[in-house]
Amino acid sequence: MVQAKNAEEFIARQRVAVASNPECGTSHYNLGVGLLGQNKIDEAEKEFYDAIECSPNLAEAYVQLGGICLRREDLDGCFDFNQRAVKVRAGFSEGYGNIGFVHLQKGEVEEGIKALQKAITYNSKFIQAYTTLANAYLMKGLVEESIEANLKALRLEPEFPIAHNNLAIGYIEKGEFDKAIEHCDKAMKLGYEVAPEIIKTLEAHR
Image 1 (cartoon, helix red, strand yellow):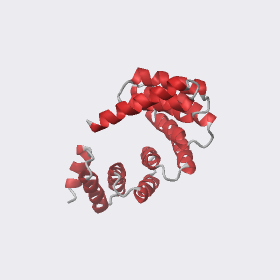
Image 2 (image 1 turned 180 degrees about the horizontal axis):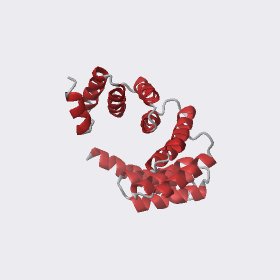
Image 3 (image 1 turned 45 degrees about the vertical axis):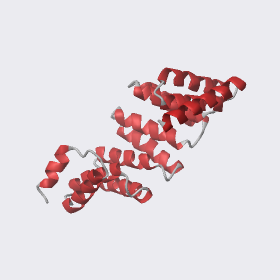
Image 4 (image 1 turned 30 degrees about the horizontal axis):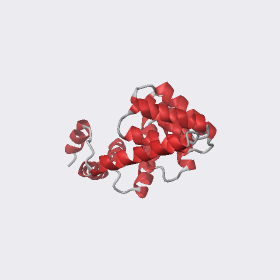
């Protein structure tokens, strides 16, 4: 209950900030984030639009609106908002990461790889971009590149379960089953739900 109370207090403080300075985009943005945390999507969306109206270069607000589109399974809307985010702030890695993700969802793997490579160029510690890029490489049959991207993710965060799961798949592709088993076990130990077909494949090589 403490968290809920803190969230309520945070939202209340941001409402006061917005009321006292309605032209402050950051206050609208912060209120939107608080509301989003409570799953008040429509209210949060309004605050993010108000944030952009007050501060047109607030790239984070575009990304949040893109995230709301994704919740509604509106890939085009998500893509559009993230494009606007990188337009108002050159080198905004999160925007490029999301653009790459949308491309992959649409099966546009080449474009996805380009966007994700930009994301990690602008932020070399963007761990989700590495694992998404690894998936993109795997879609293209670039197994070595996929493994390397996942290993980079693990250098940033050794306990990142998605990277371990991806490595299990990559090493299966290479026929290196001992390594695949090691990473599969690690992913499961970290609470990741490994696909049954991967487990079944590896059982035959234990």
